[in-house]
Length: 292
Length: 85
Image (cartoon, rainbow over all chains, first blue to last red; front, side, top):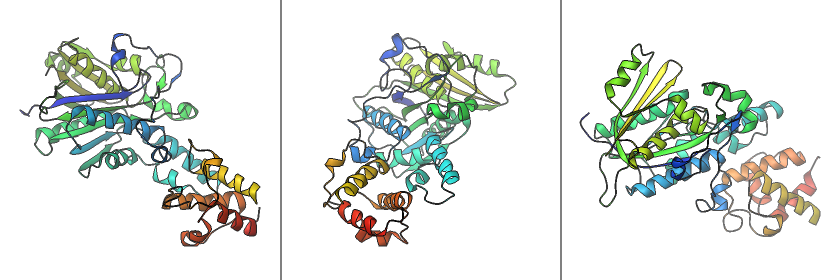
């Protein structure tokens, strides 16, 4: 794996100020049982006709994806790598509920079409006009790292030149009590939701500056020596689940949002390198970022 | 008829999630598809569902809806003549 991989741009919608990392100096600390996203104004992104069939999840995912593609200056991404632990859970829930109440008749086609895990990745591809590789990973809390690992390996292996990676989760308050428990983590942090997108590339376009280098992505299953593995990286900063949860609440996208924040920290010179350690159930996802 | 037209407009906006539009923004005689409101084939299915849920009218196929869904007025006329609830 000698090829350099760079993070050119990141964007997020979470409990923090959306579509920016300006909040890094003075972040919110979400509290309570449930902390929803702070929605940006989506009107600059979509016409009313485009937006009408998009739920909150699609709007967020498309907005952060468009933003990183534009900022990166790479043009249409060559591959789209999406993490989605719960997928379009609100539509899934509504569709199943209507199956119960309507006796499996008179079911909304829109809910049916948009109730699968990979709908988000497909919508991003249609929005970006990307006909390339498109894969969605639904590995609960390790979904983001799974998507990043695939993108990282494909760029390292020269299969693609750049990749749009991200993780997108929605958790309407009405469903938080039912489906949010799976997000794991200690209850002192609120259940939450969010969207994170990162533009990865094997090269830096002329006139652009990389935020940081993506030096490694690893997923370990039931690691017996995690501490040793972590220390072997020699990272100047090691950020774990408490870092993600304290900034973004508990969700399957917390580590992805954490990666956006960490990329911002490296880009702004706060730290020269960050190892993100996301422990989720039996798995540990590691993402290593270094100064470009 | 005008009352039913207004009711249908409201239900169409709700069913198709046309959040930034009001009933008065829809011309009762303008085409619902293509040049008019710009609806598509998925919307046609949603409109079929709207008729079934609200008025007990079950269309056999989307093709049948072609004439019915020409405009809000044609919808209202069909609903008025065929509704069972």
